[in-house]
Length: 119
Image (cartoon, rainbow, N blue to C red; front, top):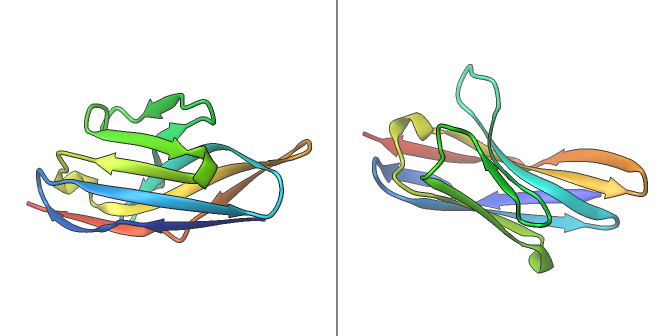
């Protein structure tokens, strides 16, 4: 029902910026919250930022003040602007969307995009 395609990852030096994009394609239903997670090698997948359909945002403490999540509902697209990047931000970043169809809620994941921050 939902396909998520992430883009925008890459290699950047510490202090630099990247903008990740996540485009959701849906065949029916609606998209509720959209979230960005990240997962480093051997580490659990952690929530980085989330945004509701009404643009209420939430951030992990480690990225507050540096990352900004935004969405364009008409395009089913969510962005993660990442500034002042640190080597600790190096991870695979995953887009996650909550899909609603009638009374059912489901979660869908993108394939992930690698972000590498060099010191």
